[in-house]
Length: 613
Ligand code: GTP
Ligand code: SPV
Ligand code: MN
Image (tube, rainbow, N blue to C red):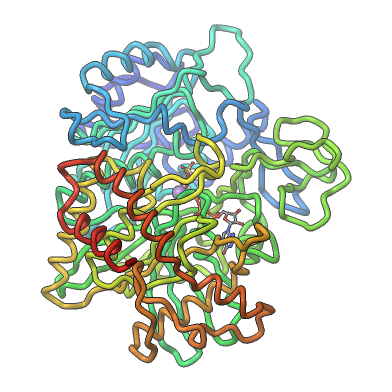
């Protein structure tokens, strides 16, 4: 039975997945969205394996998913998006707070009433001819103080299956709603209604795109895209933009970070959270295979971390997601063997290339390029084609519990205590390999003014340096200056226990005069982590610099590395004139933000400049 009735407490979808809810607010909202979007039918998602299999079969039939060779890549599929729908669209992402000041100058603000009227026009009958799926989902494990609930309505089965991997979806979330929890409304439509008898396309979407957020009413409306963060609304829209606004109001943090547990050969354990901008190394760090003997890295999360202060005054953290939506290009046995193992099967790949034997390929997967492929647009490809075979922002979607290095605690509702926080960007020049902040306030300054060269994960000119405060420029759901003040207030509250995570800044991407990366990166990043752990233990000193404490050359473990002393010196060098002009450049951002910039950030900027002279 399929029904749009809101009197019925039980709604079935014709596939024998019956989902019951007694929450009238939820039933009313589903009925309201159905009246607006006029879907052909409604399916409540229970998160079961049979439901997933049915949806996958449907998408194989519609050619949204191409089954991969079952022997090489069991139960895995390739999706090819519309070439105009390949990444988040920052220019079409809106924060619709009541007051423009609350969105701040780094967000696209839009008047909420005006946006509601635009959206109601766009969503009118936008699901005609399609099934409307209702997806209850949790961000975080059941029982954690920070776990939050959402319901996404979508007309895309690709979104349902992806949300099934990326979140705790279906019955488990509906049970939490049933127990009385508040839930966030998230409406998504690809914006491609089907006329009677009209054939569907493999990747329906619309050239008009709106990714709109209403932080006060905690609502998300996304139109026109089915790609990643635009459409999987639990991720960037909820777990970062809406959650950051909740976290500001409630005294916790929602951040664009990975989370790991490090264990030294001596058994010293530390939990580290790191904020790097999109496609700048979070997944790689989260799955690092250390090159130093005896060290282990266990994975807790690769993209989003929620942090709160517990009853003992300790900063605790957990990853609210349940899967990885990771960058494919550059992932290889050499750079990220753990990801390669994770992707053995049960994976959906989007916009990678297809090999002639039905497996996947992307730039960097193997040293030798295959002689022939089908590229991400479906065209025949050879190394002479001169175009990338996989889109630079092609990605894999896979469950965390498939990751061989996943720590069992990745789903512990108590989270883990954070010992260190790292900020970092992709910078060819200026910033050294690693420094430790002078204080919490200086750490906040390093996060606030961090910068990175643009990657394909977002629109804009590739390689252009942009300030990306806390790696959250596209993700903070409120005024960026207030975000900095919120970080400072967390520091104030940590004074009670005195247990501050130490704050570091790293740059894996500095280049030498020859244009080559100076630092080997990847598994060798453990050498930097080792120095951090020694700092935590207080067993190692450092060199004071305007951007914080640098390692002494002899304190960085370079054993077994084929690195000449000149390069090692270069990667740890801080040029006063460069740092000064960078700090002066950062003032442009501070001035643009204006009144909400905390005084402490300005005084750290002044201190940085003073230390340069
Ligand atoms: P999002 O999922 O977009 O938020 O990004 P992410 O930060 O998880 O990015 P990811 O770890 O997937 O990094 C992607 C790119 O960074 C790939 O091209 C990697 O090869 C490159 N990368 C990661 N770590 C290193 C490193 O230590 N050194 C160098 N040179 N490149 C790295
Ligand atoms: C990012 O761009 O930071 C991502 C990918 O993690 S997406 O989910 O598409 O935003
Ligand atoms: Mn990300």
